Length: 315
Length: 286
Image 1 (cartoon, chains in turn purple, yellow):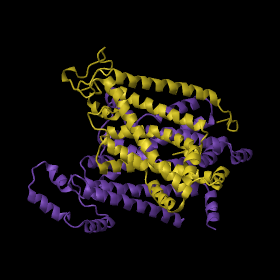
Image 2 (cartoon, rainbow over the protein chains, first blue to last red; image 1 turned 60 degrees about the vertical axis):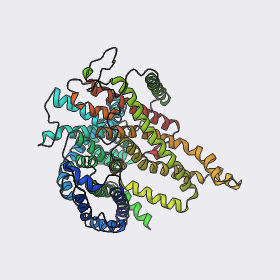
Image 3 (cartoon, rainbow over the protein chains, first blue to last red; image 1 turned 120 degrees about the vertical axis):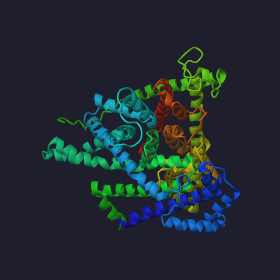
Image 4 (cartoon, rainbow over the protein chains, first blue to last red; image 1 turned 45 degrees about the vertical axis):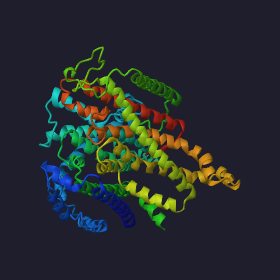
């Protein structure tokens, strides 16, 4: 177990170092002078002396290896410096926006579960019925609908025409409804079909028959045995598609002007605010690492066979 | 939950399902081709020419779908936008294939240090979700459609190289490759003449399943301003452009959105069809 964790961690770490290095090169070698970028934020004219002073202060006059060394040291200390555009420390800015993003993501996952579990189960149990056909249609179309367009439609319908749900910002529970529903709907189509096929597979297994032979109620068989056995593939896909979830969060946050870290990073990209982008990469790497590890651990919990196989493999 | 007919495995007749899909896809493809021929031969309006007196017009014979907030013809922009979105998606996909296939062939067939280096890179990419890498890379390179395409290529080639590598690994054990090798064929010849045709199906399936995703990614990032920049007629960017006018002119929201949905639907159907056709199952789940 520990070895797996260590290997995963080292993979993430090496890649992180690589992407950090690339971003370092970009910042130092990019056509736009970062000093000018910083000074130009206020749109005031700057003198040559100011530029030189700033350059000296930020260490841009040192040789490149020295710069990289000091930058690496800061990186290890998790110090990304201050944002070019706001002048605030990067980590602090990102950390204060993180809870908003977490709320949105968890809310969307909840909506996804509320759609996928009933629809997926029903279309597995009543296979071939109208509800199965309906869920198939929905998932085929759902896979083709861009989340931002879905969001625009929902804003138009429930924010403007037939209701007045908040469509911008983050101000209490009501402002979470539209973003969470949009994202939840957008990601649910995959999980409905996945849960269905996984459930069909479990329901045809021996253990379901033996449970039935032991006289367990159908409900108990379904919820305690079949559903549990169907979860690992769903969780695998969740881990694999975590990236598109995070990407979806970025799009939704921009769409709803929601003050999370996704919107923060898009603004940072527009303003070439490299320290902020780097900080975002780091936080995402940590999130991905945590989720992937949790996914791996959940297999062991859901499927005891895994533990046995692992032991055998190590022998 | 009384009866659970789980053991009954009736497959809906596959061939029938396919022919319907194929017909729909073919019809739609024809429509797309006709539309692009139409734009090519008969481009009445400049897609970026603004006319502030004729802004936000309704449908008319001159402007079949009306005009947008700058007085530009919506139909023209919609059709040209299709070229943009599809063109850039295919470009990204093609470039990823051109880099990924040779890499995977060599890594899988020759093994050795190429393979070792490749697996390190692939593990790293796997550890990090590609959507995020694409967003961040396009951010570091600067917002713009060509940088977005570059970012997509950088993250996508790995998955093709990985697929090719794993297929080649299993193909190489088969007799026909052994025979080819005993016959003294050069490695290059074995790779191009014998291995490549065998893996082409797998790659084609994965590529067509990816196409829809890439279209969605490009239009989403263009919508949030990281892809195509105005006044380029790209569907995502068009939606972003006309967002303040949706209340008075909801059609401006409907057209580009429907265009994206239908093209992605077509791409996905093509992918499903090819997957069944080549009988590639789970192994190419991206």
